[in-house]
Every structure is written in C-alpha cells, then in structure tokens.
Length: 358
Image 1 (cartoon, helix red, strand yellow):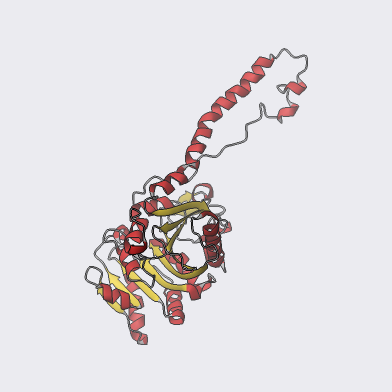
Image 2: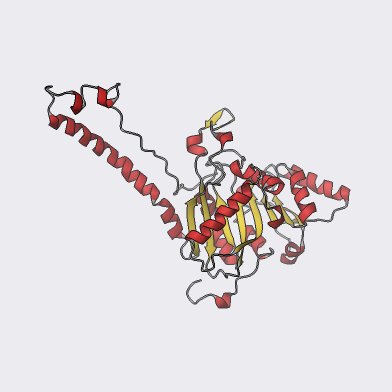
C-alpha cells in the first residue's frame, strides 16, 4: 500500500567528526599541539574546522526539521483534541529479537531503519470527561506502516471524535515500514502492563487533564492485518487480561485462534472480526466459526454491509464478511467508528462540550 510520509521519524544521524588522519587526532602532525615549528599556517587549520562546521549545517537543519515533525503532527490534530507524540521506554521497539533486523523474502530490513523507533501517539478527544478512570483504545498497525501513516490513512482520530466515545486512543509504533508482525516488548511477559503504566504516567505528566490520580479502566484492543500477533500475545501474557473488555480484528485473523478463544472463554468480552475474501484471513475466520459450532458456542455471522447497530452492540462473538479491500476495512465505511459507537465505552455528553470546541 502507499504510505504517507512519516513526519515523526529522524532518518539522519549525526556522526562524530572524523579524525584528520588515520591516527587519533592528538597524535598526528596536523594537530596544533604536536606541530610546533611546522610550516602549517594556523589559518589553514581553522579553515579545516570551518569547512567541517559548514558541512554539518545541512545535517543539523535536517535534524531540527525532523525534531519538530512530532509537533507538526500534534498541531494537525489540535482541532480534534490533544495529541501527544512521544517516545516510550516500554514501546515495542527496539527489542533484542530484532537487534540484527529482519529478513523477509530475501530482502533485509535493518534494525536501524525499521526496529529502532519507540514512538507512541496518545490522543485525548475534545470534550473528554474526567471521571477518575480512563478507558483506552489501543490500536496496532499492520505491515509496512507507521504511527503517522496509520493516523492519516485510516482517520482513527477523526472516527474516535465522531463516535463521541469517552476514551483515550493509543497507537504505538510497530515494525517501521516493514513486512513483520512481531510485537517486540509487548510480546514479553508483562510487557503490556508496563506499557500501559508508562501511558498513564505520560498522561499525568504531559496532558492537559486536571485529574492526575486516575485509574486505568477498560481497555479495548484493535489491530489491522499483522496487528493480530501482538494482540494475541497481550491476551496471553500481557498482564492486564482482566481489563481487556473488547478485541477488534480488522482483516487480521491470520493465526492464534486458541489465544483469542482462551481470552473470550475467561473474560466473556466482545470479539469483533471483520474479514475479506482476498486478505488471507477468510480461512482462519471460517475455521474459528466451525470450531465454535462444534462446541456449541453462539456467535453472529453477518455481512458487514448489512449488520445492524443493535446486532453489533449485543453481539459477543461477531464475524463480519465484507466486500471491502484489505486496506479499506477500517476507514472506507467508518467501521472503526462503528465499532466504537457500539462498544462498552461511555458517551461524551455533547451538551457539556463548550461551544466552538467541536
């Protein structure tokens, strides 16, 4: 798919100035401390460093530009609420399992370019009501995408605001523009609990929320495509399983059926699975439905274009077949927003939102 430019990632790194010869600088004849009495002109040495400084200016300007990219992304959504784009210690990457990068179909994806970005976006919608407890929607992007690309392509922020749900959206950077489903540190034992602890701490420190002693409430996990894997790991060993009330799979059921069912059997939450004919998820979706039939578990199977709001709201296990394409299942018919509207999340009371804010 075509991914919009990534506005938040620094792609150039500053290197230490190279030594003036193959020796260390203080030991060579070019250094002023070791060339007393030589024919070298001090102006020549000064000019060398002036040249280096001049050469560094374009790099410094690029770094300054990319450093403000997060601010630019935040400002672009200011009318919808507060967007915080920051770096997490507990973000999926970097991770030891991708320290050497990743190889897929004979193509290498170096760690430096694809597994070193610890960006996390946190969004608080306009009109958010502070109740002492915050519910979260955590979305995981799929292959060949980024945080910025996900927000822009699938209009997650716009759909959250339009749904009038009282929740905070969190989108962590997965494999950066890479064909990989690995969830990094969020696949580690207790990794998701540590991640959510940092998300809460970030809100207390950087958000405009007035109540800083809030508790983490309900958690809804959403994933597109390869995002299924990290969700299944979170349900299996993330540490906050009892707080996960809903799981949404957007053409993402490629495997791990046993983990999704184990969570549902234990928590009796809401599992919504939308699948396409060509995205590679149809076989597993049908296999899961067949398994549910054999064990006598009730579920809803419907066409996505015909399912009603009430059916979605009341369904606990929902399988939606769609005629949409793989990259259309989130935004083209505003399905992400529909899932939000029919979720367990509380509604923002429009009458309490100040005039002109929405």
